[in-house]
Length: 351
Image 1 (cartoon, rainbow, N blue to C red):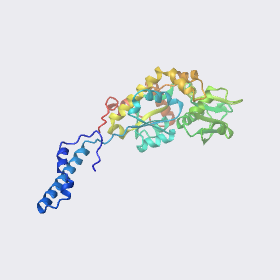
Image 2: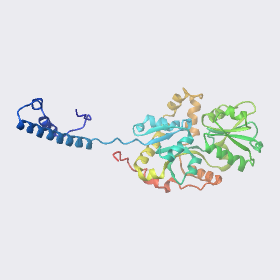
Image 3: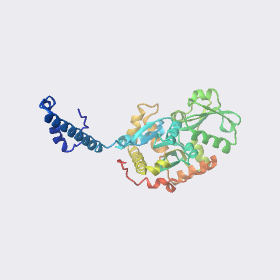
Image 4: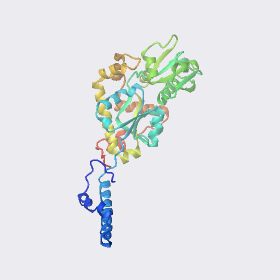
């Protein structure tokens, strides 16, 4: 029996092949050498025709193209972009992969992900291998609410005291170090802890948290008697006068050079998702509020007025200043990178 793939057009020789296939009459014939010879000729012709059909059929079956794998974190900070991707047709062309921020970086560097949102610090650490997508990031120009220092004492009193750093955001950890050491002039003792605020404060004088834990601390002030939450975006804005860039979207340079069409398609999808989420912010907030401990008005304000998903001139200045103060080489801006040829190319899905 021949297994055929539905929808594949077979050559017209298949019709003739049916006539060549040895029949039951021939298979049972006892008419002597002539009949045996005819039967053998038919068998050979049938085998040759079958081989031709299999070769023709396989040449008409295109191997499926793997969708680009795009990394996403589970934090609410990126929810608007994922809402926009889900509301558009982009998820037909993209596989979203959810993981922790540290794992997203590992998977991007290993090639398991094609594009991903990653912490700004992780991007700076690996800027020799990565390039930013232009015009899109996660941050704020002022309070960010999702990154905070929660402390039992004033920030200026943290010298030689213990500060617990959550494992989920190296950018928030580094920003806290900059603010405490260079702005407030204190040198705390840092420890790393899982992102549980209550547990962190049990063994430390202050805790640096990000994501939903920070949102709970900044939106529901006061945290508890004698404990205060300081917004990292607000502190950075007062100190530097610049926006706080928390995370960027990045791609390996090798991937950008090899598949600029795919990278460009993902980039355009993210920009379109950003615009769609902005126009549907009220519906987005209403839906998210069903599952989160925040009201819809709080979430809509957070998504539209607090967060910024752009990477314009001021955001690039803020990024560069953060890199300089942290001792990293300021990376090339997206407009100067190999990625520029990707953003205007359409994907060739047959490659």
